[in-house]
Image (cartoon, rainbow, N blue to C red):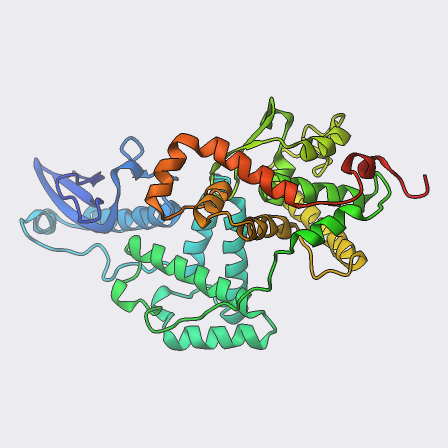
Length: 417
């Protein structure tokens, strides 16, 4: 009787730290090994179930391939006579399970990556990957697209296709850059040969984005506008100013804040995009605004999310819609003060720009905003005084935004009252 099982051969580690998966064949006390042509890290192998764990980016595809190849091998050996089986067991006899390595389509591979991102609650990245797949399907709708087909000619034609359809250059750049990320991951998973990498010859650059920052005079003018208390535009201005006073907190992080994020006179939160932990002193200006939301019943610090959502995806989609609404009203604010475009991003960029104009060093600005900085001497200094120094920087920026109308009076006044 012939028995076949799948084993992770930990005797033979590859240069990248992975191990080969092999078929182990047993017959009449003899054993032989046949390669599956799959290598994985030990953490991805489920020894009990004899399959690749779902945490592997392409677990679904590889497990399907394993089951198919195992079934093919079993069929051959069940129908073979004893002499033929002995040939399979002969030492150094190489009998391929399949004539060629099974190719993995680009779209199938991308869907597995998207699935894993969603499992890890990296919904924003998952949306970018989905948008990239949809854009690529517009150019190449056939599901049977393989990485080997993507060469310089393919990329050049794809880029021209996007631009001719009216896609902005920065969006085209994002789609092709994300496709490059797919290709790099496919190389690491041994799905495509590194020698075929087409991005060495093909390059595309994004356009320089329009200036997102405004100077402190514009923010001053924003605060001087007389707006009806409780109106949507009034709330949106409050959210913008809180973002500014919270060192340019992103709209999604602002929307997700709860009362638990406020501890004494400090705001602490983890940025969704990077996982970076922030600890910010609550300035008096921010406290004045937050008083208007002390009775918010939504469970959040601010009523940006006005209904409970169980799904992370649903919650982030709702925030995305609210961000779009906020930008609509910020555009109206810009019209009222005859300023250039103002969006929710403007608060973060403006905070950094005002910092720079105040003479704050790049190292300190980067540290305040949670970015890496290169001056090791400054880094050592900040190890001892970082929180106090960062608080002073934010206070200095907030004080630079001057206005003749008292903030407390402005926020409590209604038009016509």
